Amino acid sequence: MTVDTRVESGTWRVKAGLAQMLKGGVIMDVVTAEQARIAEDAGAVAVMALERVPSDIRAAGGVARMADPTKIMEIIDAVTIPVMAKCRIGHFVEAQVLEALGVDYVDESEVLTPADENNHVNKNDFKVPFVCGCRDLGEALRRIGEGAAMIRTKGEAGTGNIVEAVRHARQVMSEIRRIQGMGEDELMSTARDLKAPYELVKEVHETGKAPVVNFAAGGIATPADAALMMQLGVDGVFVGSGIFKSQNPGLMAQAVVKATTHFRDPQIIADVSRGLGDAMPGLDVKTMPIEEQLSVRGW
Amino acid sequence: MPRVGILAIQGDFLEHRTVLSGMGVDAPEVRLPRQLDDVDGLIIPGGESTTIAQLIDIYGFRPALKDKAAEGMPIWGTCAGMIVLASRLTDHRPEPLGLMDIVVTRNAFGRQVDSFETDVEIAGLAGLPYRAVFIRAPVVEEIGPGVSVLASLADGRPVAVRQGRLLATAFHPELTDDPRVHRLFVDVVEDAAQRSVKVD
Image 1 (cartoon, rainbow over the protein chains, first blue to last red):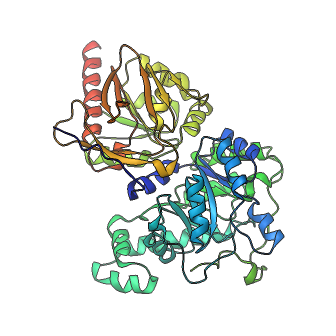
Image 2: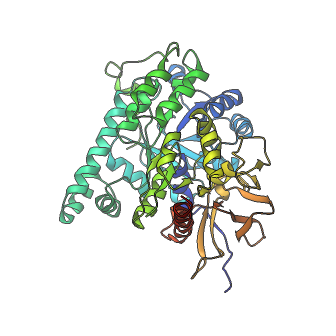
Image 3: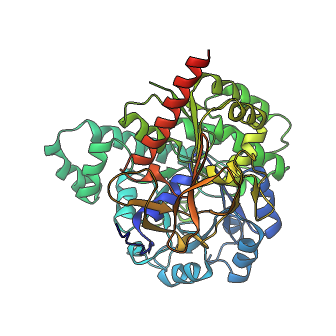
């Protein structure tokens, strides 16, 4: 028998598959090669290459754009774990640049200033996989409809405050349970209400889970925060400012990794939470004016 | 029916469970070394090899896994699992377990945009070629005398190897709907379990 030895790259299976490999892991924001190595040594499954972590983006104000390619390449060369980088919502040329640089995953991120207030990137056009933020299931399914191979909660980045990530994760999970339990005749009106593609709503109904891997992001600052999100049912966590804005980044990074693996074991979470020093300073989201909230960017 | 444990410290362990459950095989998650005593075989899943290797040491799995392999426990590594089972890696990290006499190169095909799927022929599998999914995949560079190659790419590089009761694949059978490689491993575990009963 002759075997067809042609290879196909950029298929849905290899794009969504890389996210499967990241499950149970921690993805850390880094701004230098040295931070990337600290993250890798602590057991991070991937790093997000940035010029500034979200709390500094917040403080700096102005327009936040894709990181300098020099910075991204410096980080790619420093580690062997996958490297992600952010493009602005709707900025498909930044995404093309990131793909050309050899970035392993593109985060179309509300942390940067949106380039298009109406349309997100058509992610089906790319070989590189994308992760996108969401506040509810409808938003998640719209992004998956555009080709996102992984989703994450938006949370409220750069605040060190877990409240929004919890809200978004609970919202997604409860909508999944509701759709799973409904009759098939209710799916079309649900798709209309969620503003989500019908086929994806049907898939959620049949499988009882999100169609792609779902991580938590936005406000995770401690090992207990990471374990909380895991117990709420996400597949893994992004930690942005929480590692390198803490007092002991190396220790904090290791502790968050361990708490994520053993998220159901309070004794281990207690042990790893000892002697970490100060977590990053936190911000109250309630008193934050809407124009300063990053999670309302995108739709 | 044997119990096939899945090392559940990071990666796509749930996908392996789903395939095994579909075959009616009990597949408990192994998160601590002592849980190895409750299983007849072990799968080390896909994931990030540096992370899995570090967590193997942090949670004290290294001596336990070496003991179990020496006692004849069947172990199968997929992708990151293959890297962990190797005797040596061509780059400096991570530190593999050294259970199989193979030298492995990590990320042998480039970055994620170069990840791919293709058909391969696997020795011992009847029927159509196997659709193999390679994600930032490793490749076997050298094999020792006790190792047999079960599948290779068109360019001749081995991507599935077996050494006694140890099996390693550079690709991810857990990401396809084709359970034939899982069946092959479950047969190895069943065979090993029967032999150990006879010895006892």
